[in-house]
Image 1 (cartoon, chains in turn red, yellow):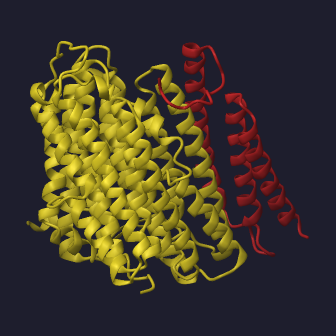
Image 2: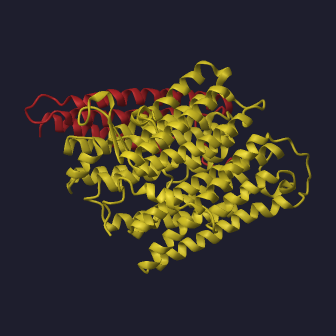
Image 3: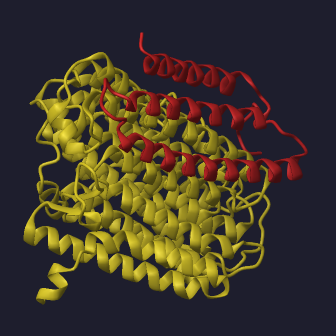
Length: 102
Length: 484
């Protein structure tokens, strides 16, 4: 097993672990963090797989990762603002199980 | 058409104009209404010019900055993408007109609406014109984030919870999609849709990508049983935004699924996967319609109706014939117009009565005749009665099912139509009668009433002119890659 495959597998591990966290944790901050870790997992896979055989690393995935990080930062910012507003209005940091607006 | 107009890169302008408009509206929030309206008109004009260009030249490919694929970013326009652009422009015009009236009253937050809506429009147009799967990811996120922000605009407890839930679902979907992109790039060394289509063959990475991407799009298009986030998000947003979400945003991810299905994965998609999607679609039709019938709140009823109508879009995956695909795309168009009109009508009723409890509707038909006409015309299209666009769509779908003796699908469609009639008439019935607790009517701006009526009329007119959209769909033959 080469080093890049190991990194890629670690990325897959992060993705799955974070997906589990996203589902089981009720606290919204944990959910936002889980999504961030999922994103990091994807980026790790992307960069790891960019290194093919003996050639120089492929620059295109790196460009994609940078774009992805920009997207992740904006998404996290929006999520945090929403979380703060939700805390302000409801006093809670979890979503209700009951989804129907009353 | 003069030569300069004909050679302008409209494909770029149709993305840039709403983006510029969004910036301007953000910088001068007090001029938002004027700037937003101007941007709406210019964007509509550029979409129309792109349409004329497409008729002249056929499929358009544009290399941004002159770099070209595989290194640069390509924009790509064929009949399907231009049809989506025109649909967006039409609904967008209606929503902008409606927004001018809606955000006039106090208590609403107009500052956020215009920049976010125009940003979302830029995302939509970018998504419809993206030529590679990574660009699709970026535009998908642009669209998702602005849609979430729009839902949160109402600021109420319900709206914030719905927005949060929507954001989590949307990001989960996007990340799954992105992982699919990574696998495809790893396996084939390109993200260009057409190059991928030629290279894709059956290997584990491809199946992994297919599974991740299709699941992501099912989640984002709210296909049963992944629809749980849609009703609260669509019902708790302000009316013009509900119209946008139901009419356009869920269609964007469905469009993306079509692109993947026909252009990226035609070599590995099987009848079985199509059958699963079709079955879930059929379940969505029945479940969504029954839930809609059970609702006591008007906006939730309309939102569950969206879940049901989205189900029809997935039937062609199982019906496997070009006619079914035409029907599916036609349903997407007519539903966009009809559902936007219906949410606007619901918004008018909410504004007029201060509530949207269906049983307490007090003589709406007499006091808001234009709104009620819009609601009924939109309902006609949702039920699939002639001469509406919904009728043509369901006719094409039924024809596809019956010519191949697939009676089960036909039965589901007919039951879905009957249930739709049930929930539309439930509202109409209460609208004519006096409620137990009569109340005064609050005035509704005329632009809001006429915007709803205009879009509802559009859904009917779509049924009388089925030829043009279907002919446009033939340019670039997006459905050529399918098995007969």
